Length: 185
Image (cartoon, rainbow, N blue to C red):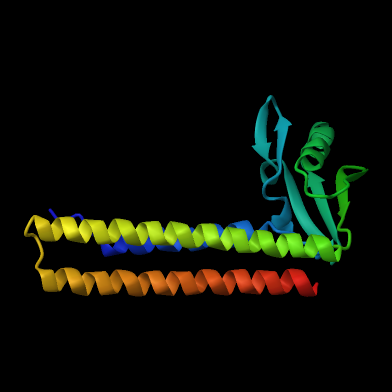
């Protein structure tokens, strides 16, 4: 049976781009964004849980996040979770709500974040290239086993390269957009 599977290769490349977009959404741009708190975990009920499973996060103002904790007994645990996430945010308790003012970014911090966005993009490109390599190896194995001809292998290699180019371009676009957003907010 042939090892090459175009659908699997495309799925894996798309997964690398989706992962990049998720990572980029967590980068702070100076504007309130609820996905900024996605990496936050809190110790509640004796277990570590993601913030979105114990509270509702909203952005009532452009420079303010609001965290509405469902169970008042978890308020301090959620505050500690946010503080320990090293997001540069200072949580303030207001009743059963935690308010998080978003401070202005310094020029130096903006450059660091833009550089980090570039690093995330490079990791995604490496993942895409690794998937391409796996696809090319599978095609060569299939040809060696006489399951496909040399012409079919070359045609499929072209398809794999086109997919690679498409997803690398998507990665570049996402990173450029995020870097521009960071530098102009």
